[in-house]
Length: 253
Image (cartoon, rainbow, N blue to C red; front, side, top):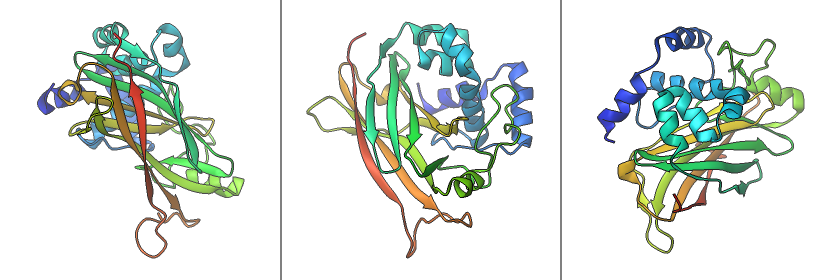
């Protein structure tokens, strides 16, 4: 799967879905960036994952198949359902949040994963590519801010909590005990859930993966947002930090 193929996949959306995406774009919902595809395509992917919701998870056995299959279509969903599914249930604990990898699926087209970040007490989480003034929860049906949903900044002020922006990005992959290979091409996103947690997801095309057991390294980045909405990243008040998270990927199919 080359970059041209990735752009073609992300650019192909069902006609009925386009109307919802336009509505979401006009509503100024939180946006995340992907390192491969245009920002608009990344938003479409993020919204598609959000749409999956509880109904989709109930319909499919695999969370990965539910999320990515909703965007790519039934054919992709079926391929993901027959791929090598692995539930690592590995959790990284930081002072800001607990990050849990809920499922990873490997197919001939690549490696796909979904997980969840749950904030620590006294912390409000925000996707690293969102704005502090963005709504902190979305309506999964209308793809617009939930009625009455406060902004991230408002939620933090009300709770007397720290507002922390985070990112979870694939960085390297390799067999256990060997030198890791940097991930050159990958897709990633985060979006907010109503309970204050964040859903994160990623995909790595096949040329960036290998068969057999592997160790996936993700970078978990964080920085705080000041009470006036200014990111404290760089300068004298820099709060940026990054931690490597090593997740085992089973080689079983």
